[in-house]
Image (tube, rainbow, N blue to C red; front, side):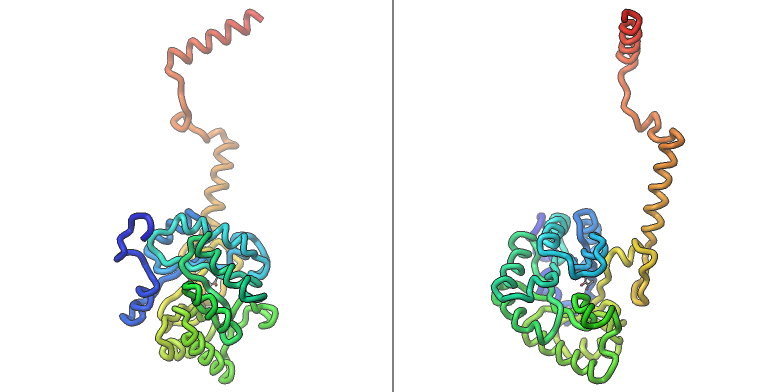
Length: 293
Ligand code: KIV
């Protein structure tokens, strides 16, 4: 139990499973810092993901590959401090689960022990089944992620739609079944046709969370900076913008600078004042001192 929430309010792994059974849609959003985590948590997210998209949207890297364990952990800790209700999932960054099992399970464990996460996410299907099962042995819940996996950008040749041929789509159905068998508690389906996502969603008993995977997944996730419009130039088809914060924040900052330049900020009300008698005594004293010198 976190921050005084009753156990009936806190979102847990069993509650995520129950949502699929009850056909209740699962809401998930990324967060990377304390203030955004607080807002998303208080708005009622079921799952908050500290995505490795941290690399792009917070740290300015060109893709997700450079982000390190230390960077991910730093942001996971901040998000955990702002999150009381949602289930907290941390993304395992590139190379944190690829080298050897010992390093993989230590990294997964660090997200739980140091970061305050409650689960980790691992990209990939069949190739990752072994590491996923070893992470699960540590009692760490794992979220799978198939379809477009951004850590495979070089092999995939860009952020392309996945699963659009019969062979590719059958492989993805198989990967989803395998991930379920391995024991993941849910699977992110990224950038695949909705017909395929619908079949996968029917074929597995664990929840699917779509991002660019159409209408029929058990839940949906977006990168928070995308749905809030932080990057005007970035607008894939599946991103719906609920705000245009790049423009709104830019306007607010321009207004602030203009108020400073025009002497409109701060106003008298935004300033601290001395009691009148002290102000006048101070003025007299300084004037007298200046006269004496
Ligand atoms: O890193 C990320 O943001 C993700 C998505 C599923 C949103 O993996």
